[in-house]
Structure formats: C-alpha cells, structure tokens
Image (cartoon, rainbow, N blue to C red):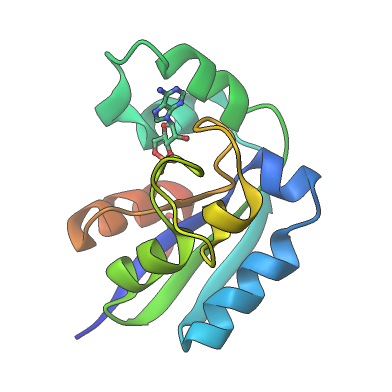
Length: 136
Ligand code: CMP
C-alpha cells in the first residue's frame, strides 16, 4: 500500500555533504520525494519530534544535536515507504545494528551521529509530517 514517511538528514549528514547520497538512495529504491526542505530546528520542534524519548537519558543531547545545524526534511512516498526507508537507512546503531550497504552502515560510527531519521510506523509518519510540514 502506498504510504508516506518522514525522512530527516540530520546535521551530521548535512555537514558531511551526504544529502545528495541519501536522496539518491531514496530515489534509486523507487521511492518518491513529495516534499523537501532545508530547515533550522528550534527546541520546540525538536522536543515535539522526539517526544517519545523525553524521559531517556540521551534526550538532552539528542535535542542539542538536532538543533545544532541545518536539517533536510523530506516527505517520502511509495509502497511500504516506512519499512523501505528503514531498510535503506539500516538499524539505529551504525555499527552494532546497521548492515553494510545501508546509509548508516556505510557512513556512520556512533548512535547519536546516525545521519538520518525515518518514521517508525505509518501513524508516527503522519504525526511527524504534521510537525515538519504543517500544510501537507
Ligand atoms: P532516530 O531514528 O532519529 O530516533 C531517536 C534517536 O535517538 C536515534 O535516531 C538516535 O540518533 C538517538 N539515540 C538512540 N539511542 C541513543 C543513545 N544511547 N545515545 C544518544 N543518542 C541515541
């Protein structure tokens, strides 16, 4: 079933010049870009986006990191878009979980600097899309 997911290229990915690489992998997989924007994230958006992690010990550094530089936000659309993007992103930890050939497996070392975010379900995607693209 065609669905939408929210993809972020986090500040480490933008800083390292990996935006084109990430977008290219999304397109090569057969997914479509339905919206794309370069954004500076404030504490409010960061807190809402990561609300489910509010009581985790790493929440403070997560918010500090995501607000530290430009982020590329995209709405990505297609068959099984949520699972498809999570497959090409790789597991959360770039070394312990992400397979070689995935974005995180190929480019990351540390869990905080894991380059990309993808929604974890169709419901999360719709919630996150409302935050990042209120008119979509
Ligand atoms: P993301 O998919 O954006 O969703 C939550 C993020 O929290 C995750 O990617 C990681 O970047 C981050 N994260 C998860 N575990 C840790 C951790 N132990 N320390 C720092 N950041 C973490």
